[in-house]
Length: 241
Image (tube, rainbow, N blue to C red; front, side, top):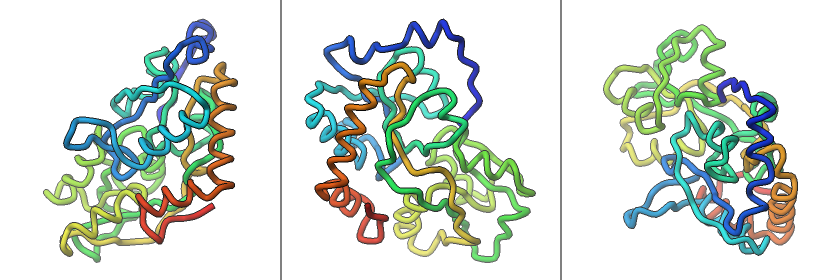
């Protein structure tokens, strides 16, 4: 994600807030299906909603859901606007310098390119990606032209309207988009592995809260319930633990 300069004072102010509260606030984007999205009832839904609710239940925590735009999701965690990020966030060394992570609850997976034509050259073309993502960072270091957008829907729209030659995002996000396009969109180029899997982001000082969620993820891996959720939301082709 983006480089963030945080002062020791800000970190101390935010520290341990979650454990001092009766309610743990779960921060998500609500715009990245099937990881997270807003359903017809106006509520947070998706894989991470179901996972987060189960983890809160196992940890005997009372949790509520908060939505936040992606490009400010880490700063607003640090400043105390919510206590956990559960938003399809890949674990990276850069992010780990600013916040802490649980173990991953979605295994490391590949990112992919999607275009309107299979003859697109993704190494030199204009590639859309969501701002402050590992995909945007990757494209910025290649010979392609990076075109950033605030949310995932806009990255897809840029390909459909010809503004971008291809979009680069998580394969698991793009797969249902391609399948629903009726042949309008196709995968192109090679899949590229990025990040260390998807984990929950937590303030570095909230170690007790991190440990509670880590224990829950470990238990869900051991009893098979995490694999069941992965298959439910991502299909039989989803990676398993």
